[in-house]
Length: 153
Image (tube, rainbow, N blue to C red):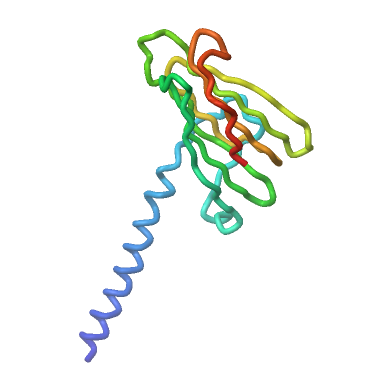
């Protein structure tokens, strides 16, 4: 009887450890790159993960399909955060891929910025309050081959 209890207890401990180890790679998969012109940087940890609500992820292409922006948004402690990657797929054409952002910050002020790359840029944790829009363009000028504005939030 003691051996059966020991085996059952050992199996329970092993199951608990395997569940914990399975959850660890999900946290480790989060990239830790520096913000690019970000308003504020924030990290989601296991302690405050319960207060975080994740929104949807999305991917928008330029009209020429030579570049795209793949992003996400989430809510944490009453604030909304946004991040993602701008990628130039056709690097041989020497044309930039641009991403435009429009949003209202936590004070209600309107902002509009654009960024460009020949390769890849990672954006981490812009704080916004409402109405976050994204537009992707690809070309020599910041308004060449632009897709439409996409209402992310």
